[in-house]
Length: 241
Image 1 (cartoon, rainbow, N blue to C red):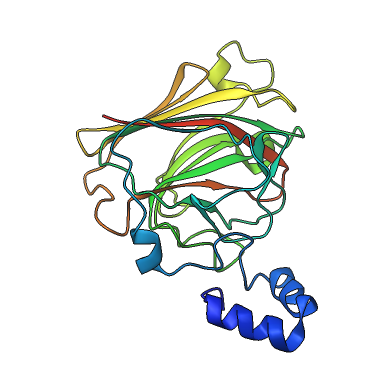
Image 2 (image 1 turned 135 degrees about the vertical axis):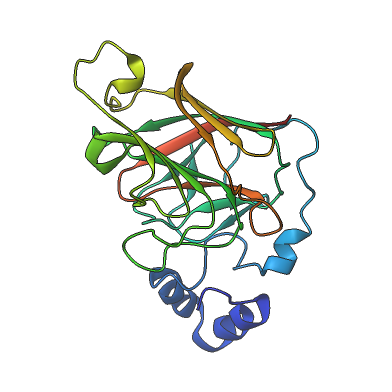
């Protein structure tokens, strides 16, 4: 039901009025931004061929993204979500094969659970409670109630995923649970078309060499994601390598 086009939306608006569209948003049929653009429409976005930044100093998410949930908002110069339940906000512009992605993020509570996707298809979202059908690499920071940092491929529950178990009071910053309302800086890189590295506040969390890297038209997008915790993102910077 999420692939409504402008014609459908206009028809529903004329027949049901604003209440009809509100009901569709409530049941997740129409994303907040973009009205559920097709893959063809999304593919027309210019690729990231030069350094690209977004600091969210505006009133709304804007046309550079495709929301798959109405949970995504811009609030006080930050991109925020609460309860999107694995319905990401996708950047429409395709990524280069080798890239550096940086952003700041914080969780409003001690649950942590900051999540992003890299090299996904730019339109998918969870079809069930468990996000086992992703199209991307998934990075989850302070996931599972602030117990784990995770790097996984296509399935956040994959038993082969890379993970770091967090320990309260750990000396190493990469092993400490995330603190509520503390801003963290994240960096993700892919080099040589297959080597992924992930940093948190300058500490290397993961290095993963994928023998079958996610490439091609279905694996070219970056997305912010969220489960239940309220999280906010800022200062996105994407640099081709």
